[in-house]
Amino acid sequence: MRNELLKELQIDDLQGENRELAECIGMEAFIKLVDVYGGTGRLYIPNPDTLLIPVRDKKICEQFNGGNIYELARKWSLSDAYIRKIVKEKLAEIRRTPPAGQLSLDEFI
Image (cartoon, rainbow, N blue to C red; front, side, top):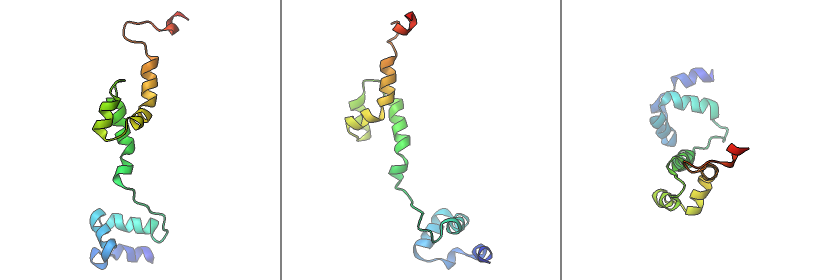
């Protein structure tokens, strides 16, 4: 019975935040959201900046060349310590790789 009534729900039937949300995502998505999460209190909509951290960090790693920590810190408005944390694995990889034309000890073992 509930699903049948939900199918008949129109945007004009909604008020306040519910209407704003339905206008933002569309009625079909709104009804699905209400059906799955309605009344549970489990739905949290994160801040976009929080969602974008992995994407930002990936970009920082791509732009890191081994010697531009301060430049990246200024560009991304982060501390140099935080940039070091982000690029830690890539920095270790760079340090393990011998410079062009130089042989590594692994080649002699």
